[in-house]
Length: 357
Image (spheres, rainbow, N blue to C red):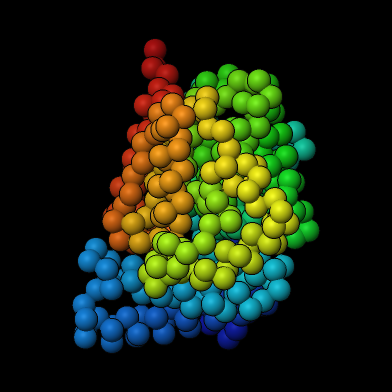
């Protein structure tokens, strides 16, 4: 789809994405990604002829998509941070569930946010407060709209998608301050016991940082937390971070670059940056999903063990063969769709949907 849309614009003229004209520069980014994806399809076909699937459960399309993401990540890593943000946003695909949700822009205190409300979900439904991933550098509503739409539908919940400040220019603790402000704003309107806080990758760590900040301030906490491949220790090195790089789409050096862009090295073990170093006692129940083939596997497992030792109710799902943030690929992966269904069931279990009279 990306390749065809890009060629159409280059040969015929401007196209739109959700009613907005796509700039030519962004369209070139889409074209480059489309060509990389075409190359990844050819490379995957050739490789599978000789050795079969790279991982036992990977379909042809899933494997080609991972390879295209890996090649795109290599290219993006050579760009200036702000160029990386623009380029990743440019290749975000339209939300396949757009007709099944309603989107409303709001200000969560001073923080821009959007309500994502699935069709048929009422104002008394549970709320998921969602912090997107992207290494604190990129990520947007465009990149995560389909994931949070699917999550909202699976949980029969409204989703508050928080568009916190990114680095550059806004480095730590700007993102944490925005996350806490958004939760406090929502808590003034409804009981936090009807709220589940969630996020993927850096957004998962941000969800934890906000919980820890509220707990330390003696304030009420959300009912539970749903953490998707959370980046809980930016100082971690080696282990799965290097061993699983052959399967995942990033490089070990990327994590060092992203961490340095977000916070000074002296702050990498600050609990607000790396929740693995926090006192975790008193946190609400956690569902944590992590891929068995992803680079963050070791640190997520260690975090789950530490949380359990602190008395936190933890449910850890390690999905064999899956890469970082595989849930974003639910349109082509039954495993990802199943993981989102598990997440939705967890939210409904923690915050039951009100019965209709």
